[in-house]
Amino acid sequence: MGNDDKPPGTATAALASALANLERSQRRFPEGRRRIFLAAIDAFAERGFHATTTRDIAARAGLSPAGLYVHFGSKEEVLHRISLSSVRLTQQVAQAAAATSGSAAHRLATTVANLAAWHAEHNAAVRVVLHHLTDLTPDHRTEVLAVQDAIHAILRDLVATGADQDEFALAPADPTTTAIALYSLCVDTARWYHPAHHRTPERIGADYAAVALRIVGAV
Amino acid sequence: MGNDDKPPGTATAALASALANLERSQRRFPEGRRRIFLAAIDAFAERGFHATTTRDIAARAGLSPAGLYVHFGSKEEVLHRISLSSVRLTQQVAQAAAATSGSAAHRLATTVANLAAWHAEHNAAVRVVLHHLTDLTPDHRTEVLAVQDAIHAILRDLVATGADQDEFALAPADPTTTAIALYSLCVDTARWYHPAHHRTPERIGADYAAVALRIVGAV
DNA sequence: GTCTATACGGAGATAGAC
DNA sequence: GTCTATCTCCGTATAGAC
Image (tube, rainbow over all chains, first blue to last red; front, side, top):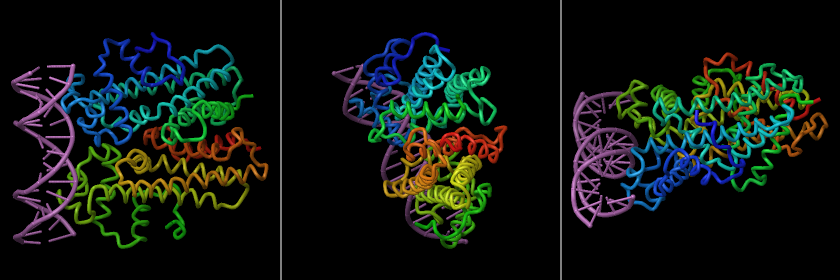
């Protein structure tokens, strides 16, 4: 749902504008709301959801303590909007790459490269989603997990297609198992990547594309 | 420091007794302290550090609200002890496996298999460490990160050894890069694994050992 | 839509009896 | 070493003026 409209930008587009575009496409996106949104991503990523106070967020956004509640009904709503935007954008990155023309090997390599680069570049927003699922209401958590499952399904389908066409020779024969491993590589990048890392996100993506082709036994 | 004494149990030993043994070997480990320790692992893993109250922990341990402070000076100290025990045990698992005799390929496969199985089996304790580094004091965080680096170094050395002996043909030529990928596979298991998963932790370990050999280009 | 002031509840930690 | 009672602070959210 909601993933069949806008094509994504490149995997390296700034998250700030990407998130803003997504929100704006959904409805109006006032400047104050946007500033709180971006301030909260940084604060949640640095200190965690509960350790971040609504006062922290408001101060970072240049507002008074009560300023947050003009734009969001609660702190949990802020987390919910951030989580959903982040995971949906990730889904769009995967979808666009998987829809590329070419061999299954080429499409898989492109998808893994873009996903890994994306998770490195936007590690703050991704970590917020990964670390704070338990702080969402049950309904909101379910919503986010469903999108994560959709991303996994994109990888699984690519792997299964390549295996069916004998382009791949899987080691653990199950495409689902292989897809989990590929997704782990990409996701975990958001944990260890740091802007001071010597490889650029693009380079990390290229490295992991090569790793992915080995994992699936591409010939 | 503190990793050169006791050999670890198997990677599938129950975390409860393993953690208890580690703590007991360090000094006395009263029953009340142990109950709080184990209760806090579950609570932190399920709800998060800040969302868990000291009253929650005490109640799970069968104590009154003030009972926690007899055994720990603060809630952060509980998190610190859990994080350190968990990451040190993980280090011991890796160290014991890497010290096995045999080819570099065999040692790498064994290490990855044991690490992945460990992260699946003890996903709760591992997730506490991964998700709550920001809730530790700066000194305590540094302490935990140092052990994580040591684990990474174990993998990196195995990869480098195999490459030097021409047992491996690395795709991203850098052993460090390859080791990061291998560690990501193991670590991320703690994120997605769930007791209802159809593969056992041992099976996951075996699958990832095969994946690891492909990644390093073992012949 | 932004502010200042504040209500309200809850959580970490302590005091002191048993 | 465990309890009950409580202190004290802080964080979310609201009220109401501008």
